[in-house]
Length: 162
Length: 162
Image (cartoon, rainbow over all chains, first blue to last red; front, side, top):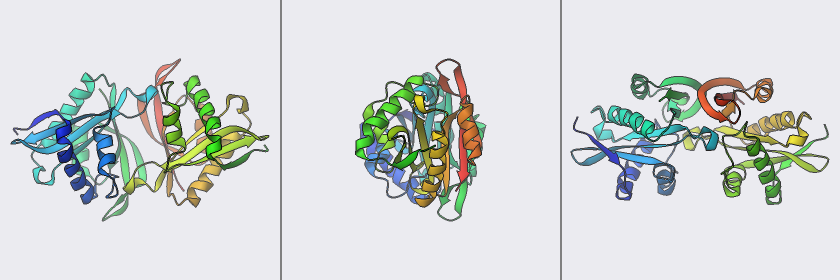
């Protein structure tokens, strides 16, 4: 792994939107579907309360993640995060590198805990990685995700104190 | 109980905002704090994807709730809901009436399930009511709510299939 992870800039918006469209097209990991606009996607990833990062392999953007408060005010000490890896860069440790980076960054930004609201239960590779990084399944949402091949499957809530 | 529950109209915005401010001032139930603007509050309650209702007692608005998709696209068949009851109308069945009404409405709107993302664990009256209405605790978020008197307390995720 010679990946590099750095804060995203406005110049990265096209690359982030491109990754987002790829992940959404696959349809197996995000609740967002193809009706999501560029504005909505970038509003989540690069909004005023979000901190976004890009991961590069050989100078090419192959991944991105964001951190943002999961709730307003009285819940804003817990961050939410979302991660994307380009299809062609899977299996090269980009997700793991971003996961580790995000925990360090979340602590640095002063968050007390990290929460994923909606991890698709069939996404076993992601779940194994998040558990390796210390996140625990703290909730199960029966049939909450409409999987493109499998129909309604469960989504999981993951959490870790930082 | 002679409460009446009807869809909210733009004319109810002042009353909804007033309720919202009262609940936020108490600080014990919502993650929203006093930095929340009227625009943000009404954006949640009366936004394009939300269905909002008001509850009246003797022609006065004493409660309100909204239903909206809890996730976009592939998760939009599960609704989220939020409820508020005026301080002076507590203990008169307004919350229960809105809870029951919301389940009927959510089904009518085609939702498959209902999810509350963030019920403060110390809000035992609400929890008893939601369990009575068939919602189950499916997740626990350690220390996710900054309670004004008790410090960090857990928040719970509740869910029911409709």
